[in-house]
Image 1 (cartoon, rainbow, N blue to C red):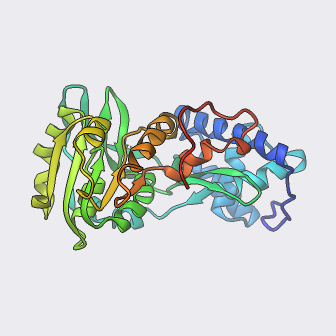
Image 2: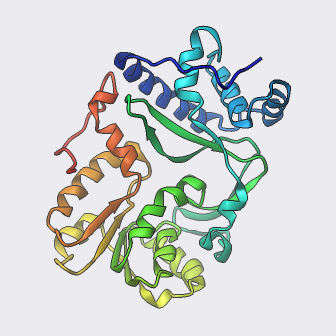
Length: 317
């Protein structure tokens, strides 16, 4: 019998640093190589037979993929990392998102960029939020799954997903949307999710989008922007983000800036640090960064046995 109420034994700092690294690497392999490897029918059967939650049963199955037992010697690792990692989510809560309800994405291509609709399988794992950092230093990826197929729009470059309307995108953009106001600038266009959500806010007077790739702009202008109810609020400028910020952006021009120019945390660290230097030049403007919490975790050497290399200054508090 599995027990969700067994006590969680505390880990020492050296164990935590080692397991942070092990866990992030393991989950990256799972999501990149075989995100549908957990059989949802097995999860449901396990939950029914043992009386545990579906989240817990999924965590057991996920841990078993890595040869980790949820009892015995592996119990401490399982309870400290896998139990707070896994979440069954309701697809309806994401389908109720205003962008998801109002915008239809066609199959279209420009250059090496493509607009597509893709589908998650029932039980297929995906990142659903920033890392969760516990007071003891545990850094736990957040993995979600649905119990039914879930279709979502995506923009791809050479077949690689660059932006999708999956839960991670909507959840990790929520703070920026809520805080946007006045004259807003966003670096990075993608599917225009932030642009849409910010533009429908009465508190936002005008929104400028800076995007480097002309094909991304062309796809957006032709197929997505015409569906925006307040598209007259939006101006799209083709430019490198740092060229625009360092040469064309003026003090007092914007009240709020959202930077979303990296694909993921791995390639975002140096860009984040560079943009933090830009931020210092605009003391009257509020800056918010996509995946900032996760990026800052990568920049905290005390969380890792072998800290990721980084360049540039530490981010300002």
